Image 1 (cartoon, helix red, strand yellow):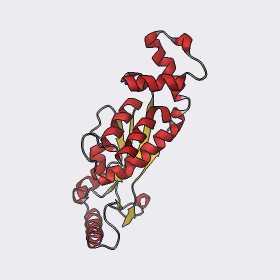
Image 2 (tube, helix red, strand yellow):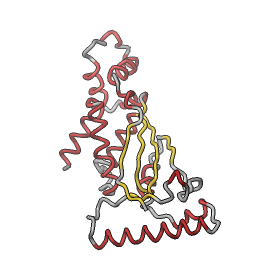
Image 3 (spheres, helix red, strand yellow):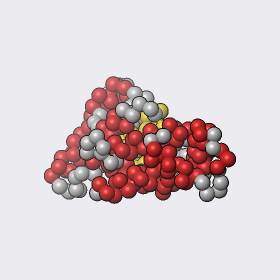
Image 4 (cartoon, rainbow, N blue to C red):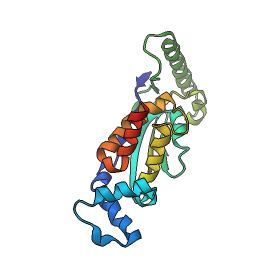
Length: 216
C-alpha cells in the first residue's frame, strides 16, 4: 500500500505569459478602443473589466491543471460544467500490474493527525481493501469488477481545463467558500493552487487571493 498527499500542477503555465495584454487586445474590440493600447495599459484595463463584471473577455484564455486527489474530491471537481476533464480510469487501470508498483495508492486524509485512533482505523481499512482488491484480481476478476471495493480515498489523477472566468468561479466556490465551507481536502488543493494562479497573473486572480486573506 502506498500513501501520498494531494497535489496540483499547472500543465501550461506559458498561457499566463502576457495574458493581460492578450485579454486587453481582445477586450478592446468591444469598445473599439484599440488605439488606447500602450505598453502600460493592459493591467488597468483588465482590472477594470473584472471589476465591472465584464468577465466574458477572459474566457478566451484556458488553463489546464492536473489534480492528484482522492476520488471523493474528484466527484466535486467534475461538477464544474464549463470545463473539460480527463481522469484516470479504474475500469482499465489494473493496480496489480508493475506500472502501478503492484499496489494501490491512497490519498492521506489531511484532517487526521498521524498515529491517532482515526488515522490508525483508516490505515487498517485501506490495507484490508488493498488485500481484497488484489485477491479478487488474482482470482480472475476484471479491474472494472474489482473496483467495486475501492474507496473514496483511492488516489486518482484528473486534468481539468477551463477558461479564466470559470477558474475564477471555481476558486470562489472551492477556495473562498462563497456557497458554503469547502471540504478540507478541497481546500488542501485549492488554496495553494489559487496562490499559484495569483502569482502568475496578479491582475486576474489577485483580488480573489485578497478575499481569501480577508476570509482567514
